[in-house]
Image (cartoon, rainbow, N blue to C red; front, side, top):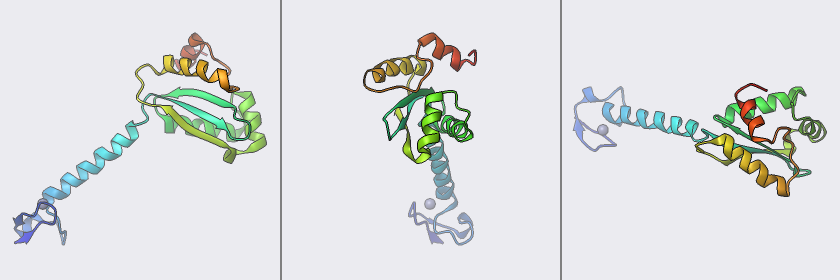
Length: 148
Ligand SMILES: [Zn+2]
């Protein structure tokens, strides 16, 4: 018999894998927990509105995505290849480099992120110079659906 470190129950050696100090039951619960935790973290950024900001001149690009990390990688790849459609942002990126840009989520878990993106673009317009080319609601929507 051996006392499980986690559930504190005395169990026969058959309930332990190798020299583990926690029993097989506790071990698999832990694995499930870690798996869920990883999935929750991946899902945290679902439907978000994000911002790319040039730290030198405070110009911003507002966008929305269902997967921020994926979108972020796409933006970075385009900028580093010099082919980003937001010409002004590409120019500043060439001038100042990656380290002078900040990438962050403004809001996440938004039900309708296209509407919210449109609202936030209009809010940010007041105080910031935008990199965005398309700021109209229909244009954003069409762009998302790959029609533009
Ligand atoms: Zn246990």
